[in-house]
Length: 387
Image 1: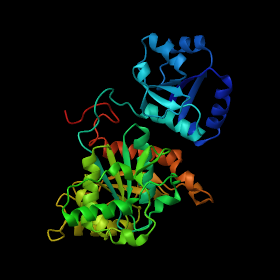
Image 2: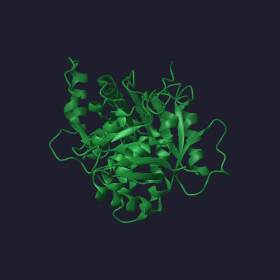
Image 3: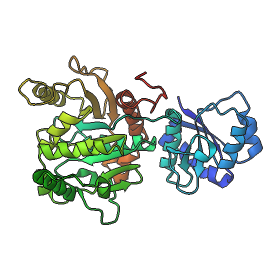
Image 4: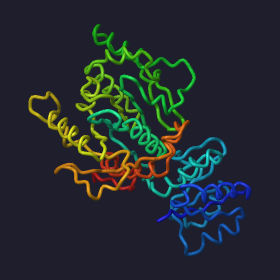
């Protein structure tokens, strides 16, 4: 069923292009927008019995509606100064802010998120940082596509997210525009970590100086490593030290770790330390066979791995072309999500499409709900599952 949004803005010329795009885009099946540019018509509608799923509007409209005392649905203020989805509209005592002028796919995506997400107000989301490792039994499964889209979804909800790419060759550069500046990269941080460990000195490393931010993802990261040799020399202990630092900083709600080949030292550290392991696979026998063999190895008594690898493992099928009705995974494997293959991703200049597909993001949101909600109470349902 399509989500129903009430939109209230001063300018009627703002409404027409938005509705035109909605009706001729993939969002047309997911959103129904009732738009108003007159205050009296908006208030009269909101006094009626037809309750929408969310209300979005200019601050003057929202303020007048809130005075009525009937604000029982999620709402957002359209900000003209760069506010983004998830940022609290503190001056109005609740709600969130959405940038009024942005790309229409992103704007409609924020409207959709507003309907899906009902976060508890005024409560701390996390007691500790969630470390979420994205792994697979072989290459070309789309780990980076999954990881970046999850980072975007969680970031747009207002969570503080860090994306850590541990591939030997960082493929996120295919999808992301690296921010300008002279922020030192991960290789410099690794040098400092090793130097401090070798000299047994008091730790004085300030992690924040190494962070860059991808604003369109609402996500922090390290500047990608250019020299492949630096990544190849990164040991399991180096990786564990880095992960511990990111968790200890407590600056982030979630750290999403994108791994390379599973036999690499860096991936082994992620298997060892992550609170949740998300295995990305395809719905074919080869992918499942390799995944099961690796799980068997990781859970063997002499593997040197944590005995809890299976307990914290979750599974998602990626790039699915056909439904999975006739495909039965092995006993004990529960598929938490099925992300579709998007035909437009085969086109030229497709980089931005990887992070802006409504169908793919819808499935990623459902995946986040299933595997992240138990670890992050209040994010999706507004209920503390640990009480």
